[in-house]
Image (cartoon, rainbow, N blue to C red; front, side):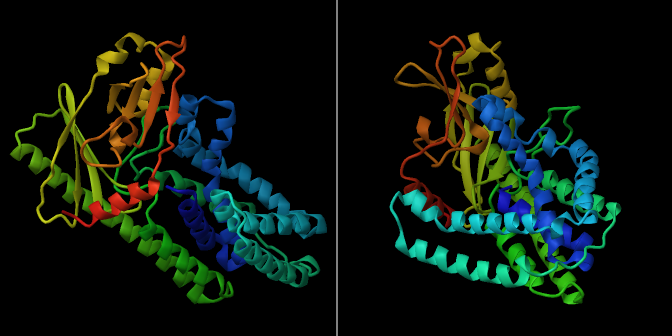
Length: 400
């Protein structure tokens, strides 16, 4: 799922393991542990689009990684505290500058997006930065830090749970993750929850923030953290049962319409678990459809999409083509574009609209240039009128 969700889950794991001993530091290190698997994106600068696609959610998201690496991270952090490095003034200054810099970056994002200077955002950034720096100056930079009394075993547990839960949660998304790497490149994808789902994340954050304000000795701090984990887990379990219900609607509709298919799959659309996209694979076409829990009838309108796999048949020995076929789990269609190039669309993730689908409407699409020696395959994600896309999504969620 998205980074904020993984940070939240990691922080909760840290709190449950070490919160009673070291307080908010446990949340911080748990959040770092929950982020570690996603640091595989740092390799993107050295990889092609297709190589990066295959590498992300690979070995760093595997059970093997979760079982082996916590010993290393635990050793480094244990030494950091055992040797007293965390109390050095140099570290305190670097740490303070890092958090102030992060605050400024978050506050100026609207300015960067708009391309215009927002004096309101500049004012907010300066005000918050000054207030936080004042507190850091009085309560952190010139104050001896409380001694951290932990063991190597404590840190091993913290990093194991914060890393281990990351790929498990990702496995519930449509994107999936290579849980069994490096022994298998099979992507585990249960397709029950969107990669970004506010209902899972926002209440979870609320419980953790409330727990963070309490002293580590307070039992209510533990209760709040457990409530956050329980509520998010209950919602995740709901998405599993919800998928079973949605799958039944798709199966019944396919049977009623006498559509012959080899296999089908469903997955929720972005930001919610109400509107679902489904694709059934026939001999020569895919059948694409959407279903909202708010639809007046439990039925789906399917729209055919030609596979046209033969358009790339002569390029099947190309390594990038093989990677895309693997990544899409065989759910891909080919379109010939007006400029002579080809587009491979991953139909698992559907399109931004339900009917009259054009090439640019697919969420995951790749442009292939048959005139280039290596096909020069590039991923295309940029879309115009995203505001209109989200407006249409909201309208479709409301049902029909």
